Image (tube, rainbow, N blue to C red):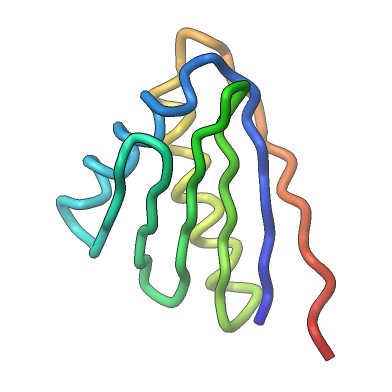
Length: 99
């Protein structure tokens, strides 16, 4: 199953995790607290973890198209919430496919 991870360095990781999860919860299944979140996108799972120095995001999906779609959704919305920080593009690192 394809998986990718990105890390956004910020002092506001917990704040952004909460904002993203509350926003997504209007349309999809979401569980979260101030440190971790799980979002069930169509065809993918997004996992977020607030760390002391940022927000780590992992996407798992059955195929590359679903993976890229969920990455894009997370990235676009994070960019909207983090606009004061001029976020820029995230560097999504794809995990090697399990054989």
